[in-house]
Image 1 (tube, rainbow, N blue to C red):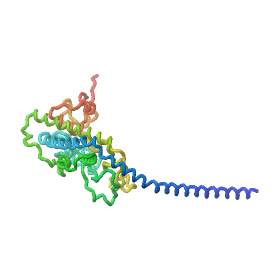
Image 2: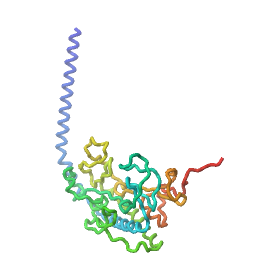
Image 3: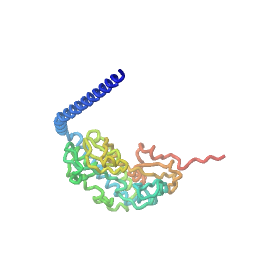
Image 4: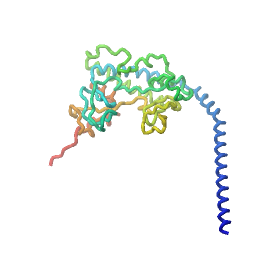
Length: 335
């Protein structure tokens, strides 16, 4: 009797397993068949959606962004002829001034430990305005870029690519003629005689440059509300379009199991126009910023700090970051 129960239970369990496997096989095949059936419909919907772009109302915004980018590069190039900057030899840290700070925040790849003192060298335009590049597409909804096609497409600044897809003229004089070269210099003719300008003239250039910076970021923000852009979660790669590319060039070593494949998410303004936050010296701070007061010093975007060095006032939205009225060192109480 006991043997009969054991045999019947084993037979029932095997039948249940076979039925479950059959159900899974049928479900998988049905889902796969349905996916193949709807694939032409998805492709047709993507092609019909492409007819709505570019949006006419956003074309002036894209043109304004390109103009602001040109003015920004020219203004920063002019100010750098008067105001010195330094950059770290081992990491992306930048400081506006002749002598760098002594804050121990260097963790470059050639340093043996973290939180080391920076080794400063003369900086340039590329240290202030970081160029983020992206693949140039013929139109926004073209086929996804494969890994084997990564060298067939041109790389252009992501802001310029966004403006082109938004309807800006590809032959516009502000598109690529003002891109910093490999040495960090502007490819356009800078203002002559900047070294001999008066304080008021330098302030005027700084105001124009700061206004161009704010206009550029606001314009990119407006464009990103309409046009899709992606950024990798693990690196700074940007792609302008509804889906990211398939080029396996993600450089984060701890994600090697992904074979260099990017993990995409929605891009923000800071991904296309990095603000490049730097330490800012205030009047109450020591001549050289020390590591002991790092909790009390202020910060600012590099462009904002560069412009305020001429004496102009930064927008109020940066006051919290800059800690204008903050302490320069811990308070010492007397007994």
